[in-house]
Length: 362
Image 1 (spheres, one colour):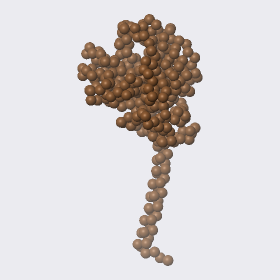
Image 2 (tube, rainbow, N blue to C red; image 1 turned 60 degrees about the vertical axis):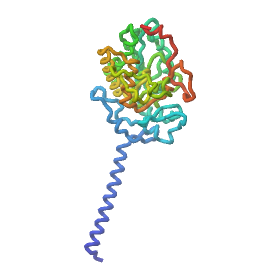
Image 3 (cartoon, one colour; image 1 turned 90 degrees about the vertical axis):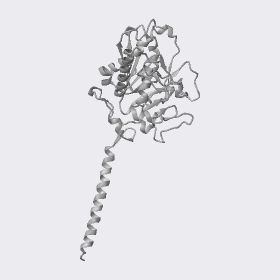
Image 4 (cartoon, rainbow, N blue to C red; image 1 turned 90 degrees about the horizontal axis):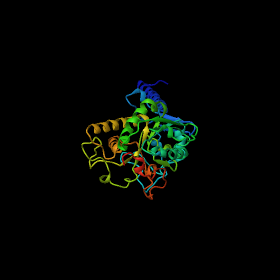
């Protein structure tokens, strides 16, 4: 049987079409495999976050130890099977960053995902002051951290103090270490506050960038009460201030004087963030501290001090550099404040103290 020339062309077109279709299927199969990260222990596959992959500073020394790691918060806060759900609180920002409350994450799944990465979390605290000084709070801070903070993760505590001999000895779990770094004392708590950003920036450059993946900068006059785990990890993390989480922006205590580099106009602002806790990828926190340090120093040259020192500059930075994750006031409560119905658990809180005892110029 002989085919006409038109029939031959038709058959050829069909064959070419089949090969093109097969090629398309094969290409997509391998392309999808290249854009997935597999966690064998949990049998969970997670799309690679390209924005996270490309996050880095211009300085090679601060290249992220986790820049090729997926951003698990995308999975944790978008998968219905993971989300437990709360209807009494807002659990997402206008720019779609998660706000972490009790009941908005699955702690078991969070731990499965992050523990497979063998991460190290740095934690900075400052114990500087007069008389009994802030070093007095270190015992409770460290002992409660060992019970509740990033349990079963590698943790490196960096204690900055003018009294290194008074740092208490606390038994550390495996994979957890304490480094004591001596810094100058001061007769002004405002000066101590202003120097924190510079000190953290310098420590990241000299040491922390080589030893940790994430970092949290915490106030030492606080203690842990309940789980603070990997649900708190993100590229840039801030905590909503416990005294302002129900307030509108016109009540926020931003720096309102245009002469300060921390200035925020009355018609701007998302949340009021506490200066007692901030964190994220080491290189992202490095950028934050560098910018805030420069602004603090510029204000000092102009003989102006922001309303709440480094907290004012932190709020200015986070207004224009949105956090990728917010932690609810559970992660920085104030023991002077009565617990509210929205706060199901207090994880970390500022302890009640006599400021006249511990602040040099009060």
